[in-house]
Every structure is written in structure tokens, then in C-alpha cells.
Length: 320
Length: 308
Image (cartoon, rainbow over all chains, first blue to last red):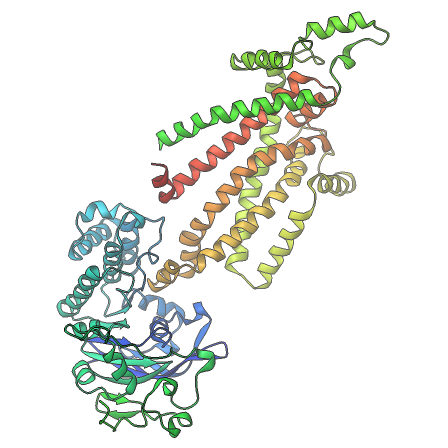
């Protein structure tokens, strides 16, 4: 069952148009990976779904976002506030800065349950401590009374996850939840998120630039490039048969064991900034398949069931 | 927390000692002496020398300082040469007036400054913000002694709402409190607004929105709380400034108080009184800073951690 459906979403900030015709679906109990380099529009997609675009001076230009049958683009602010945190929760990129530094950990988690579920302080506290224990936080009752600066990054991210869960949401948007953490901690947090989806039947939108995490956790993948969808497919499909040159380049960047030394590759060039997106296909400056048509025509989206790709030469398989 | 306060108070000892040296030296470096004011016209140099000896002013300055410091430490601020009263009695008489004036002015700056600053920050880039900021610009640029004279002209002389001077009624406090308070209000308002706009941009504020909290709750319970940390610092520094500023304002409004006492004694070179008053002001500044540090430690757990 489709929980979140984004169709042809375009977002503008002033005269800039950093998101241009994004579409994807997310089902209940599914983990959707949203991948792409920095500046491809991943976080902005999350901000749009959370309805927080006005905070950064942006607005939805066209397209639709349906969450469980509710049209998010026309939702009034008061109703949106009952959705935020309650049904759609956000786990942000940097746990170091996403907690209020002068408020006790416990109070920050309690806030969710008392705000959205109307729990009394005692019940909210009991619930928060239980959630913290589920997040495998040792001595949860002690940590409850501590301040963010007394915890490590991994512990803080667990707190943020516990906070996201406190009002029992249907959808969690995790915006690069592991980027700021040590590698060993990264795997733990990703595992916690996977377990949550499997145990509670949540939907998870996992924003990442790490194809390794995608392979480990996701059911389906949307690849964003410069504010457009380059390709979307099941995770098996993406890795077995990547059809967009950008997807192929991303997969080539995953370091593998047993690879010859010095053969680690990157993608030459950088993501263009929103001010100077090229004409035609936005990947053309970095694409090794680029033909004259790529510099003039925006590639149409070829949809094929739940898979889609936006490349003039997506049918050319010889280069895989 | 208690150890922190004790540690901070121990630190006050060397600072006070340094302050006492500076006070003593400055007072004695000023040309002129109190004897000129008490010696009778036509007195012989011998009579003058006798007076100088009576007040110990003939001894080397270092000996005078040590004597004074010893007396101060045993609680004796000396006797006023001109007013012929114990300095401590003079201070006790005048201190309540200064504390009332300074305290009310500080309260006014705090309450009005924080509310207007918060108002400007919440409604930033609207006409409310621009109106508040223009008023703040005026408030912070007008010299207080001049503002005091203007207010006397308008509210006391023209409109006759408040008395021109003195300290007989509560009404006589209004104009001096406003005169001292307005400059502080402008400063506090500006700092509050800037700090709130700075906090708004922090990541955790976006998270608070994502939690579904209302913008009002976020502004009042989280952003303002953070913004008050720098405001506390400003206010604690302001305590000293207000007492210092009150010196001239008390004079403008002809109010009794430490300021008037200080200025009168200064013009008569009444060393013990000047020294006593300056010492009181210095202690007030030090206690103000200490109070600021303590309040900040109560408000911010990270500060508490750094201390411990």
C-alpha cells in the first residue's frame, strides 16, 4: 500500500529551482533509499515533505505530494503541525547539533509524547525511558537526566531516533543519519533503523550518499542528480542493471575488497550548482556517453513498471 | 555549584586589593587637598601644617595607603574630613537611594529590553521590527545626562507630571529611572534580537519544527532561552555601568545617593569619602559580574561543566 506518493514535484527558492519534477512512491513497510551527491536535492526533498520549505524561504512550485491520501501541498499549517513528529518524523543529519544543548535529554523526548499523544509527565517519562532502552542505550534512566554534550555522537543519534519514534509515526525520514558518525557506529544505527521498519511496519525514507548502506538496507532506490530523478528501481534492479550513466558511476565508486590497489575511482567533476545547471541533460558535463542531443534536450523519463530512468541512451546496454 | 561560587569569591580577593591600590593612588594624584577647604583664611603656615599632620597627610603615601587598608579591613572607612562624620555612616545614608534608582533602572532595561528585542526578532523584517530598531537606535545614541535634562524640561517643567528633582516621593524616581534605563534598554534589546536571530539558524531549531511544535512555543521556550545567555552577560556588566552612570544622573536630578556624595566629596578633595564611595562602586561591579556568572551557570549546563 502506497503511503507517500510524490508526483512531478518542483520547488523554488526565490528565482532558483533546486528541485525539478521529482517523482517516487514509498510503500508501508518499505525502505526507500534516496541517493545522490551533495547538492542533488536529497535534503530539500525531505524538507518539502516535512512542510518546512517556508523556513528556508522556499515553496512548492508544482506537482503533488500525497501522504496516506492527504494532499500535503494544500494542507494548512495547523494540520501540518499535527502531522509533523506525529505521523512523519525526521532524523537529521547531524546528531551533534540536532538536540537543544541546554535542555535535558529526557525532556526533549517527553516533549513528543506529551505534545502529540497527550501523555502526562509521568507516562511520557516512562515511555521515553522504554524507548531509550529499545534503542539499546545503557543506563537509560541516568541518560534521561543528562544533557546532550555529555553523550557521544552515536548515543545522541540513538536519542534522536528514540525521539522520532516517541509519537509512533508511520513514516520516518532519515536524512543521512550516519554521515557524522564513526564507521563502527554507522552500521549500528543503520541496523537499528532496519529493525524498526521490520518490527513496526514503518516506512523509511533513507537519504544517503553511501551506496553500501543502500545495498545493505534498502528495498528500492531513487537516484537524484542536480534536482532531478536520474533513475529509480528496486535495489536488486539498480545494482544488477543500472541504466543511467550516473547510477553506474555511483556503483563504480563503491570500494570492494580484493580490488587492486589504486583502482578506487571517483566521478570526475562536481555536481553543478543550481545557478548554473547545464542545458539538456544535467549530467552531460560528466557523462562519458554524452552525444549532441544530451546538450540540447532534457531526457524524458522512461517508466517501466516501478522502474524509471531519465537518459537519452538508457537502452544502450553495451557500456554497463 | 557552591564550590564554584566559593572559588569565584576567592578570586575577588586579589582583584579587590588591586582595585584598592588604584583607587587610593588616583585620589591622591589629583592636584589639591582637603586642607584648602577647612583651613581658615589668614591662617599661618604652622596652623596649616598642624592640620596636615592631624589627618596624617604628611606621612609617605605608602604608609598612608597601608594605614587606610588596615582600617578598611577592620571595617573602618575613616572619618570625612569636611563632613566630619564616619564615612561608613555617610555611605549607609546614601546607599539605599542609589540601590533603588540603579535596581529599578536595571529592572526596566531588563524587562523592556528583552520584550522589545524578542518582539523585533519574532517579527523580523516587518514594520514592527523596523520601528523597534529605530527606537533602539535613538535610545542608544542619546547621552543620558542630556536625555535627563530634556525629560526634566518636557515632563517636569512643561507638563508638570513629575517633580523636577529630589527624592521625596516615588514619582520623583520615574524620570531618573527612565534616563538611566533607556540606554540599557536599547543595548539589551539589540543583543536579545541579534542572539535570537542567531539561534533561529541553528540545526536544532529545524528539528523542533520537525517535531511539530508551534512557532510560538519554539520562540519562547527554546530560542529565547538561548538568547538570554548573552543578555545575562550584558546585564551583569551593566550593573557597574548603571551605578557609574547614576553618578551623573543623581547630580542632574539633585537626588541624594552615592553619586551625589562622590561628586561633592571629589570637588572638596575629601579623600576618605571618595575612597569609600569608589570602593563601594568597585565592589558592586565585582559582585555584579559574579552574579552574572552564577546565573549563566544555572541557565547553561555546558558552563556548569566547564567550571566543574
